[in-house]
Amino acid sequence: MTELNDLCTNLQAIWYEQIPLSKAMDMRIVDFVDNTLTCRASLGPNVNVHGTAFAGSLYAVQALTGWGLMHLQLRLHGLDASIVIANGQIDYAKPVAEDITVQCSFGDQAAAMDKLKTTGKGRFQLNCEVILKNGSRAGNFAGLYAVRLN
Image 1 (cartoon, rainbow, N blue to C red):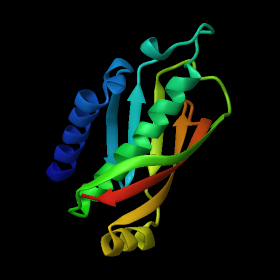
Image 2 (image 1 turned 90 degrees about the vertical axis):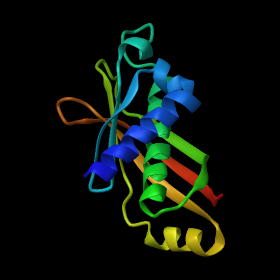
Image 3 (image 1 turned 30 degrees about the vertical axis):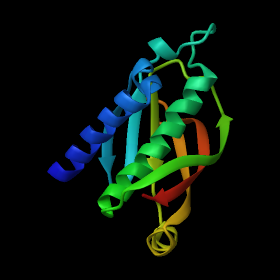
């Protein structure tokens, strides 16, 4: 468990130091269990004129959660790599009038991970969901993350 905590602490530092938007959005890691990363961003710095979460913030939090999950998976496999979002699509299902909570699961990516280890590059499809306090889904993000070993 300490290794996972260290990995999450390191990821949070990378976000804040290298992706300043994450700090401005007050984005933080809530949990990383069973290959599922949960992150949260405060509503305050991400609010729009309607008092709900700004669409760009919803996109950014989900895209960064997926990127973070990919980063954690690479570290768990002992790999150092560059990660970029090759493609991303978002569905804004309903307004978010509370802190933004996002979950992203790695799923079965064994074939893609094997290809990455063999060829030095790979693509990983990750899906994130905005989850409200009542458990309902407020939207989702499907991201294709391109990874190249360093």
